[in-house]
Image: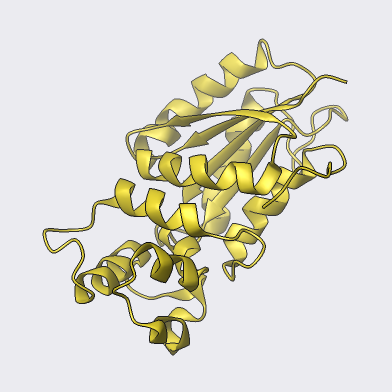
Length: 214
């Protein structure tokens, strides 16, 4: 049986930087993969219908498309439906919208409310990447529910890092994403949206081999 392949569509280069570190920890060598970043959420949503139609014309039986996008305080159900509609219009099958009984071809996942919530889901990884951050970070009530952090998670991450002496001129999102993701343990993350993403990847793959995982 040939090795599965996953095409990941993300909204910005910081998501790409994080996933380059995270995907090998999640799936090991059980699939090949490629990441395609866009220039923001609007760019991804605008290009998604045409891109999915292009995939539909050649997608092999063991290849999958995963779309990852930030919620950004939008209506989550409405955003998810927009992604599902783009797949259906391209005649590609999702779990919620199967096409003539076809296997799942597209998985749509939303980072709630932003990708940085996934980093707060693994506070030890933030502290390992940036040792100046005090250990009390993981004990603070406002960070215990990563997907419910108020006021924007990337802004919250910037404040935490700046208080510890990092990124005084402003958060370098790509550098921070890469550094934190490199330290993350996908099996211990407290972000529900991260766990949904992780489990969706694993769902697409055959039974785990001894060398896979973190």
